[in-house]
Amino acid sequence: MFIRLTARILRWLVCGRVGPLWMWKALLLFVAVVFAGQLLGVIFNKSGVQPAGHSIFSSPDAQGPSLGSCRPHTHIMFLKTHKTASSTVLNMLYRFGEEHNLRFALPLGYQLGYPLPFNAHRVKGYRGPGALEFHIMGNHMRFNKMEVEKVMPADTFYFSIIRDPVALTESSFAYYKEVAPAFRKAKGLGDFADDPNKYYDPRLRNNQYARNLLWFDFGLDHNANFSLALAQRGEDLIRRTFKLILISEYFDQSMVLLRHALCWPLDAVVSFSLNARQQKASVGGMSGIWMGKAAAAAGVGRPQARIPPNLSLTGDQREKLRQWNALDWYLYKAFNRTFWEEVDKFGRKHMEQEVSLLRMRREHLARVCLRDGGKPVEAHRIRDKNIRPFQSGFVRILGYELQPGLDNATRMSCLRMIRPEIQYKDLLDSKQFPQVPPIQAPQNPLLIAAGAGPFLRAESRNGEEHVGFEIGGRTMEEGGKDWDGSRLVRRNQTGIRGSGTGRSP
Image (cartoon, rainbow, N blue to C red):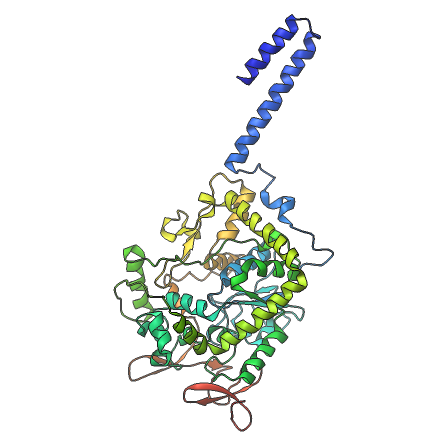
C-alpha cells in the first residue's frame, strides 16, 4: 500500500513536469529499499533471533560498566554452601571457566567427599601439590584449608555465600526431609523448631543438615556449644581465608561486588535462578511415585504417602530456630554487617545503578534465551532431557526451556546459563578427561544429597545409622581438630573446642 501510494504521487509529480524522470525513479527505488529494511528489522526484533555472527553475548552491553585496568581472576575457590543459591553461583564459574578453557578441580563423583572434611585426593587428576594447575574449585565440600591449598595456587581468590539460618532451615527441611533423620521424624518444621533436641541426634548420618549447616560447611564443629569467644574465633578464621562473603538475600548486590572483585564482564555474573524449588509443594503425581522409590533405594525410610511438609512457622518458632542455629546466626549477622560496609565503600548510588543494569541485562537475556520470557517450569515439562534438573525432596525443582530459532552462538551461550549442575559437571568432566569414561549420573539424586564417600557406621538400638567422620584416616573423636587446629573435646554427644584442660572457652 505504501509503495503504491508513493508511485501515484510520483506519477502526478512527473506528469506535472516537476524534476527529471530519472531522479524520481531513483527516489522510488530508495524508498522501497528503506521500507523493506525497516520491515525486516521489525521482524527480527519481534522474533528475538540474532543474525548469525552477531550474538547478543558479543554486544557491548555484555561487558557492562568499565572496570579499569584490573586483570580478571582465574584462580578461584568457591565454598559452595547448601541451600544458599550456591548452584547459581557455581553455574557462573562453570560458564566462565568453559569459555576461557580453564581447568576445574572436579570431584571423583559429584561432591568433593562431602560430608567428610575435604582431602586433596578427592580431586580427579590430582597428582600432588603443584603437579597440575587448577583454576577453579567450587563443588560441595566440607572446607579444609590445608588440603585445599594443596590443590589451588597461592594467589587463589576465596569466596562463599551465606543465608539467614531460618530461611536456610526452611529450605533444608523441604529438600532433605527424607534424608536427615532429625527432619524425617518431625511432623513439620514448626514441630521441629519447638523442640529440636527431641528429634536431633548428632551421631546420626546426615543430621548436619538440621543444625548449624553453614558452620559445618565451613569445616567447623556444628555441634559445639555456643559461646561468644568460639563464635568470634570462627568468624576471624573465615575472614582470614575468604576475601568475600556474599549474602543470598541480597543476591544482585552480591553479584556486583563479586564482578568487581573478580574483574569479570557483566554477562559473567548475569544468571537465571537454578535449583529453585516450586513454592507450592506438589502432591502425588509422577514425581511423588518416583520420590518414594528413591527414598527406599537410598535406605532413608520406607516409601510413604506423598504428604507435603508443613513449613509454616510462628514468630516464636523462628526465634527458636535462631537459637538452635546460634553459630550460623552469629555468622550471618557478622557478615551481613560487613557486606553493607563493603556496599558503602562501593557507594550506595553506584550500587543502585549497577544493580539496575544487571537486572535489565538479565531480563533482556531471558527474553532472548528462554521460552515465555524466562518463566521456570517443572522438570517433566522440559522437552530436552539433557537440561532437566534432578528432583529431590518433597518439592519440585524447576528448570527452563530454550527459545526456539536461536543462532548457534546464542543458543550455546543461553544453554550454558540454564544447564543444571550435575549435567554441567559431567560435560566439563568429559572435556578434561576425554579418555576416562564419565561417571553415570545417579538415577537417585538423594544419594547426591546425602553425600558420597566412606562412613564409619554403628547401628543404634532404634536402627538408625551412627556415623564417625573420618579425618586423615581416623575417626573424628576426642583429640580430633578443625582446620584451624582447635582440638575437639566430646561431651554429651557434642563437640566442644577446648584448651589443654578440655574446657570450653
